[in-house]
Length: 172
Length: 172
DNA sequence: TGCAATTCGTCAGTATACTGACGATTATCG
DNA sequence: CGATAATCGTCAGTATACTGACGAATTGCA
Image (tube, rainbow over all chains, first blue to last red; front, side, top):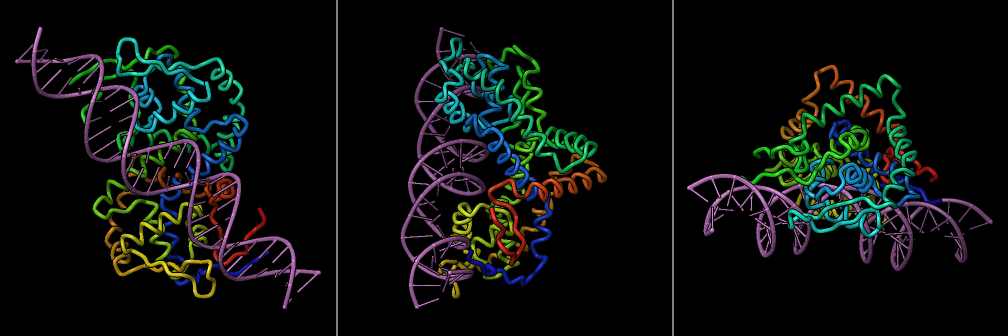
């Protein structure tokens, strides 16, 4: 196999160290790892974490429209179109024009979608377990608690905040 | 202002609850929040978190090539091309063909790039502070520690793992 | 009722990621 | 040295995000 040091001259050996320990950088990497673990565990089912989340939410909220779905799972309104389009292409959901509001599309899960949710469950659980595997039980619990706390209190800081169901849209 | 409940019928009120508390889902949201906070704080500088990370790493490792840069900051080799292209377009770095290895491109930071790194520092620090603001000092420290631990031990699970400088590329 | 303000889904444009593959180049070993 | 393996940067294709904007539809209020 070919080998050689790759252009790194160690000019400022710990110049990156601060960067590499920044929460933002670590969060980005943890996201990538978490995403990759899901794809790996759920390979046989051909869905992404994002598609899985949308599918579960549609299953829990039959007839939900796209914007409301975004509020439930904290997605961006612009992104969801493509996601549900892919779920539709895979026959996991149906998308029909809203009856009462013709601007909306009503989303319903299909039998195949329900089957997938049921069958993929072990892989989903395994993924969550693997993500936090490096921590012991006590740390794991604390980490999950802090994650929830961070996401809740920082909710408003992304374009896709979580919004309570049936709630009045707040001012910007 | 127009208002109406948005198609959500609360059919299975807590059907989403398990989903919304999954580490994977929370990590995705925290990533989005962290990214948005950075863009917001560093708006005046016109760089993304990813571009900032690359710039800092190039500054610390003059002449580094793209693949080695990927190993330092755990990026994907396919993605880095676009990132450094944008940095180059903004005159923050230079990219020249490698002298010893003509396959590579040697990356160097420019004066403007150094200036940006210096001037953006307060915004970067503010971002890190804001991300973890909901936690108290003790939690913050524990969270950072666990983040590092999770990322280190799960390192191999993404396509873009961190790799030690000048190290032998391991087998797959 | 009629009009202004909102909302829904979408579009174009940009940026980050990853898969699988490729030509060009370099390293390794027989 | 020469053949083979490995590596570098990149490409095409797909998926997730976000900005800003828009037409169509709905709501709220004068």
